[in-house]
Image (cartoon, rainbow, N blue to C red; front, side):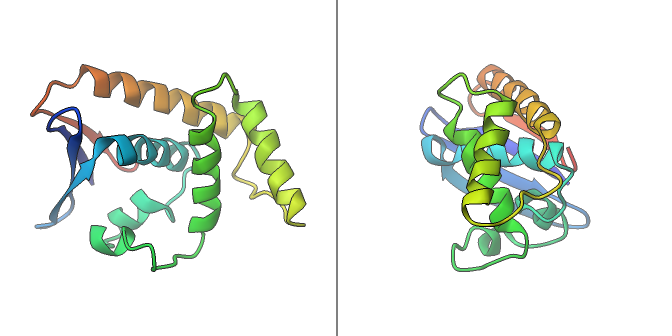
Length: 153
C-alpha cells in the first residue's frame, strides 16, 4: 500500500491511499491538527511492527471513513493511541525514548495494568528516528507534490 501525503498549502494536505486492485481513497485534512498525529502513528506502528493500528487496518482494506469514525472501536487501537499520544505530547520537549517509556509504564501501573510487550525503549528510539525522517521529508516536499510512503514501513 502507498500513502501519498500531498501538500496543498500551509494549512491543508491530502492523504491518498493507493492499494491493491483499484483501491484509491483520498481525504483532505487540516495540516495543523492531523499531519503530525498521522506521522507519529506511522512511526510508532512501523517501529512496533503493528498490523493492528491505523495503517495496518488501512492495508487490510478498512476504508478511511471507517477508521476516521471516532465511534468505531478496534481491538488493540487503545494501546497504540496511548503510545502515539505520549510520543506526540513529548515532541516539544527534549524527552527521549527512556522518558517516554517511563511515562507509559507509570500510566499502565496507575491503572493496575501491564505495558504491552512490544512497547520498549528500543522501539520508541526507532519510532523517534522514523518520525525525524518523516518530518524532514515533509519540510522538503514542495507544495502540490506528494511525499509517498510504503506500508508496511
